[in-house]
Length: 122
Length: 282
Image (cartoon, rainbow over all chains, first blue to last red):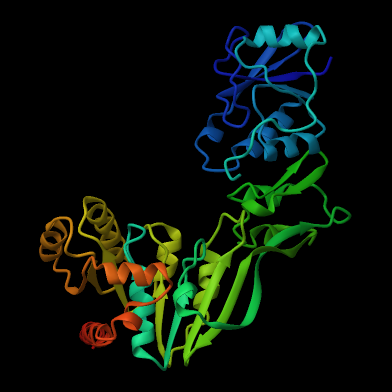
């Protein structure tokens, strides 16, 4: 099964989904069948004045994940993820990583066709 | 000689001073409005514009036929303006600072220059006064490159008066750097004083001699004057809070047009600046 990157506040399945994609604390890279996971830190993006979303997209792409589950994705990050062929599930804040994965496995996550946030520059 | 007119706080009277001084001095003067996000000197100068130029800044364009996805362009870019992701290269032209690094490091010569529009520069004149201003494209985030292009119109053989934007960040520095004198316009209010201190700090770092004009000088308090004395900042002019001046402004007229006696004061202001920058430079 293809791996899923979920933006998270802590390196745990019970961490809240970090609503921000670009400036998320980190990503849990999860196998949706076995729930085995690894953690990728995204702290460096939080310190960037601009381009955080693009950098986060690069990080996710490097992790090998083919799907992103998160809260909000800005326009540049969306463009970068789209170019990398990574599918995006948005509006998944206010739940845990585990709940987001369950929702995805149940087929309840629609893959986005457009970003749901304006960038800082807009 | 280049005189930059700055303020820290917005709305203190930079444009009033710049336009009145430029018109009072008459010939062999050029006025460059470098407040490219909101230029307004033309509303008072009413220049006849005879040249309009679109200004662009170089940004990368990638030939995917030549690209081998090595990623060197993305590594050198400090602004995430170009990334190699998946099997493609994505330039983000609006993030690009035009350093040329990506083109330089590309081993396949796959990156060439294209342009991102910064805005336009308009040039004209009024009674022998040369006028130039920049108008930043709506949506463009970077004004310093356009400001520098406006400043390229400065001619060494004449007096160049620069109307700077408010604040103390990059656009203001781009409008003051290399000037022979900075004229700071403030008002005697806590806001005026606070932002004046920031502006004086910036001018000190640049090492440019400066002087002060207090606008609406008969209102507020005397804290600006106390500060000026302490900092050894010469007060070169005081403009009162006069209804006649405000009315003229609201009609797009200059002080020297409705109160010709002010012309002498602006000429004297220029003489003082000339003396001060002469002493500094010789």
